[in-house]
Image (cartoon, rainbow, N blue to C red; front, side, top):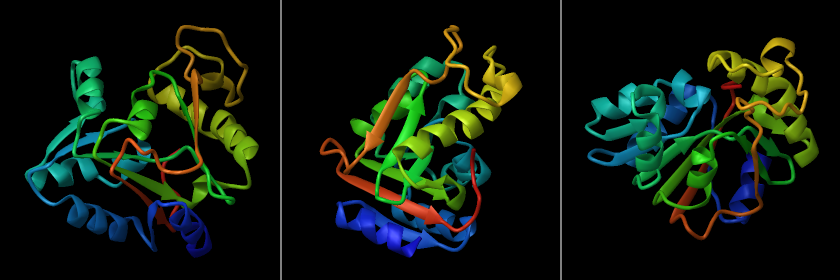
Length: 198
């Protein structure tokens, strides 16, 4: 992980490696501080780390469509946050972030909008290359995510991608970060030596 963090750091990401989720959470809370607007993308990692509640307790305004009735409004508002929290579906050993999105709000925030972007990445997301990253997402992450959202897609039942053409399809957008976006002031990539997220 240290070597991987160095590779991303050389590309302009602000990187750090943490031995536990607890250590990473402490760093995130210190980095964000108090009184900020924080957007959150659809992320089981962020959910597992209880950052929504912890950030609110620290007097931040936290916008997360998982917690709001008007999901579309929350998705849009989160794009203009001081900080945006998410994970990456996969991280390649040669220094790329690989993500698939259905609605586009998470991918949009990874490219432009928030002032600061924080990726929280568990060790289970590390793969050899982009092709392995896409395979990991389709065959490991999409099925559980589909079941969590009660989506009527084949992978929810088989855990394997069928390249479906349903209205509930999640694999609509593919995004690969080679370098941080110029449209975001700071992009942080925090590696966590635990299995987190899907």
